[in-house]
Length: 100
Image (cartoon, rainbow, N blue to C red):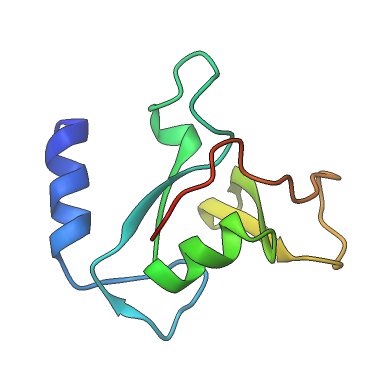
């Protein structure tokens, strides 16, 4: 499936948010490390989350550390602001203020 087709499918389907497990619905694409890096739109830098989770990420309340290979397969590692993460990554304010 192409990136564009995957994006359309996630935005219009009823998928479960990997962070807010209660949310089932259309998901929003979030770039984990922003868009000003090489290969910014590759799968390792993209996560699809609920609209509310996306807002919390941009407000710095949720920190996405990235995708990691675990014994259970590829897992999204994240933590809430103030909690200890496994990579030492802390919340950074967005480079571009977005209006939702």
